[in-house]
Length: 221
Image (cartoon, rainbow, N blue to C red; front, side, top):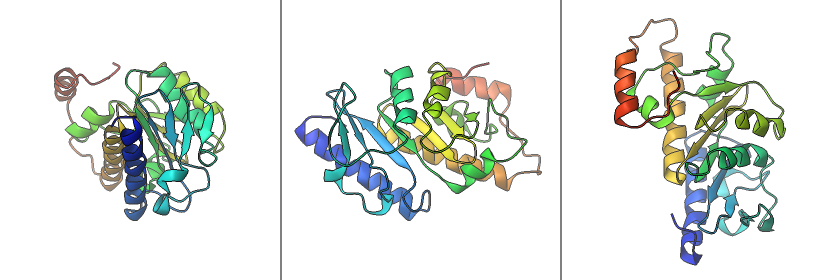
């Protein structure tokens, strides 16, 4: 999606359409969740604080310039530090960031047995391809700038994190990629909960290695 005059208008509509779809599918509720997307001029479009994904107004999205200054629209989400950390540490790979409060992902974040370094078991090929390893970060108060610091400490090595007792945050090369990835994260979390205690057959290290090499997945050993 481009960021010229027509491109910006289209991106505004796409953000609001995605948000409405998330709301209607129960992937976020009330005034929770936030989305940002990079424009061609280096600026950002960001969903406003206190706004429901159900009925966002494209004209009222927060508009930042390339220097990070708010130049138009409503007051942005209080999670700007979280979004900014992904754009800062993954500048070539991040064109959009999506943060939801989706039920299954939040549930997985609260289980004591969840592996902080790799929060989701290797259940499907697409979870590996779209997400790589998902880091579980500790609990932070909503809006706490320390969330951004925690993402920066990852050094750009992860495109998806799970905030404990809060929800998933996924960065993608563009808005569609980020949407597909956060949807994959939620479905994988749902599978993990459905299969909890059932000893499912996971993808083997060899199968994971094949996916990583074939699809150039970021995957730390």
